[in-house]
Image (tube, rainbow, N blue to C red; front, side, top):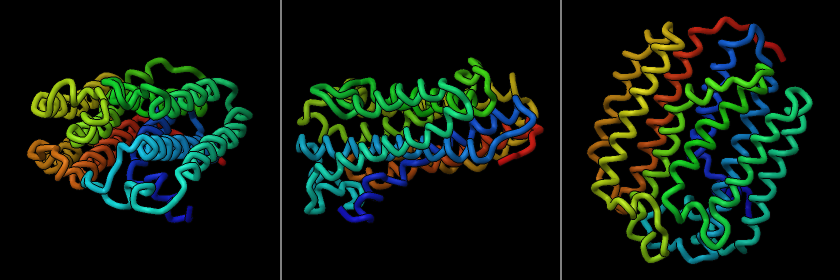
Length: 302
């Protein structure tokens, strides 16, 4: 296991699913307090990225030992490290556990600063990181993967970050995070629609398989539109100052949505499909965060 392989297993190209919800949460917290801790914000970001890296590594490990991945799956070699490299899969397992351990080590600082609530969310997150890929029937084999990844990364992460930065539990954060949950869920949905042909022999029962590609694509398009509508609704009700950003968001994301809607999401297009939906997450998440931040008046502290 080389450092390059370890980084590829962590899959930095998927980190927008961790970074954007955390960024939005920091902006949400900025609307609730007069001062924000930069060090605490960065610690929370690092923890979420480590959990995302662990989930990616666990998933590659279990796909490898179950024989789900192969060189015929239209994947980039850097996206399937254990298939294309002569490395003991147990190294990947140890790396995944190391990512989780590092996240909890950083969590000590967060607990000292913010109390035990972030630890509770962290334990829940760690549980889903493991059960998503491990076990006789992991969540990734069921029509629950999109919902679980969306709720955990897109909603629970902002919930924990806002509590850590403000010192108070804000249930409204779960409502404000609804667009983020949809966007994160779409990343997994993209992967599962593209992988229908290889998931069926592996006896997976994903949402994409249950619906079939055409109906899955229709739902996929509807959820993508719903994420934008949800953003507009949240901003209109709670952060109206941010609506000034929305025309620029629509103009910036329109070409991305046009490409997304034309994509058949077939195995052959998998290498184009994932960058597409990740770019959509980055653009929409960044604009959404900026729109929320316009309602804030906050000082930064170490």
